Picture 1 (tube, rainbow, N blue to C red):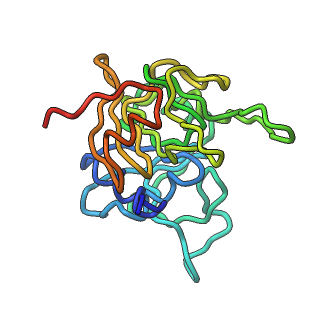
Picture 2 (picture 1 turned 45 degrees about the horizontal axis):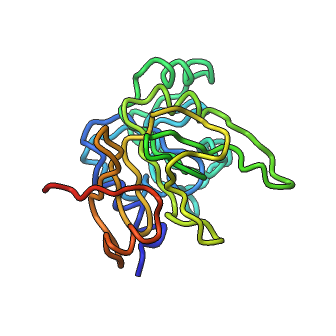
Length: 212
């Protein structure tokens, strides 16, 4: 079977280097926090003003005043710090984050990111801090399903939705495969319950096999 959201979050967590400063976007990316061992010294940043965020809070751990940017209750790790929203955005814009993990509606073969508006009737476009993260983080990882509900690919030659950032995506993690966005093309790193041939048949993006 393709990876479910928890399995995908665990796969993303495998690639986060020890000691990294990381921002996890709203939605599925927040699940990555549940798969980061504390001994790796990874420091999670949330744009509403916290460093040292831990996994999601459950039961008696829930504090309504302690949430991530998506308003989900979270825990804090020893040494956690709180600060003004403006300071948080200065960290994001100043290149201080090693990795950002975000969701997306589309990613282009050249690493363009579209994750804030589809133009669908009734949608409420809200880019939030995504633009700042997309350009400010040293590496941008996207975590998404490879295909939309109608079966259309979300990894595309050119984005048709409004862009969040240009040429900013480093790696794309999906339920069917992991892709690197490189100057030589979209490189397939790993596949789940599919084959490269099947992916080539369903995607309009040329795929390059990982040399390793």
